[in-house]
Image 1 (tube, rainbow, N blue to C red):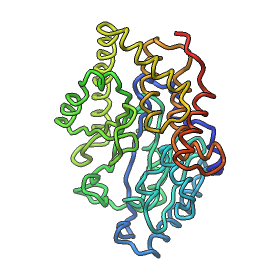
Image 2 (cartoon, rainbow, N blue to C red; image 1 turned 135 degrees about the vertical axis):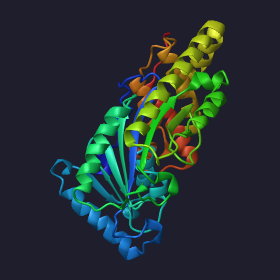
Image 3 (cartoon, helix red, strand yellow; image 1 turned 90 degrees about the horizontal axis):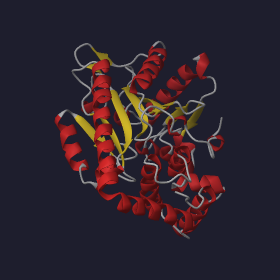
Length: 352
């Protein structure tokens, strides 16, 4: 499998068919691990980094069920391919923009990926569509077992798994759920929700995780601490919090429908109209208007497009995806024009 085989396809996590998929885009569980016989990545020299990549690659190849995995040395990739994988959530921005020997292994259906020499030697992640944290945890636990049968991971009896950043020490587990919360943004209730989450050690990040901006009303909710609790307890914490956020968002949507249905319908219809007719449009504007349309479809205000298509457009209108789809590099101005053309080829005049 090659990167170009992914162009035009939608990742498993974007199918829009999982539990609570009107509000939950995806569930992701990530594990941080380090090999006991090597220094942490930032202290490793070039030779040691290369040896880490070779060691992990050899053991990935030894797992029979992983024979179809794509293995990429990140330093050899073009910029556009690195950012294509970031937009697809298969690789972190830190790995894409890092230095030294580093790699990523990607499952053939994009169910999971293994980043090598990111902040830690191993960053393993599993993604599921909709709210399915327990399934993602079950899958990554099995992957972790397979790797630890072959690799000697750094573990301390008192502190648990040792990681480069103290915030990951212990379980090394980060459970994240990507939520679409446009009504809480419109009603200005979102800040209140964020403050409540901080009190229970749950953090909120942008579309591409730590350090990324909030765009398109998408928010990643995840556990803040990894030490002093078991993996099951951390999974349970996020599993219990997310349904409450979903409930708040649904109440906010119903409030908007009852109190200002005409304004809401007008807002959604204008967003759809702009996406259908714009001659040029930026990726930020596209996310903003697709977010409104997505909420409108879920509330029955628009029937001309479905959620899987909207989810697909969220990713395929991003800069690297758009250029990969068209097969050549584009300037920012050219991308804005081609993005508008691409949107119009997937949308039709609204009937609702």
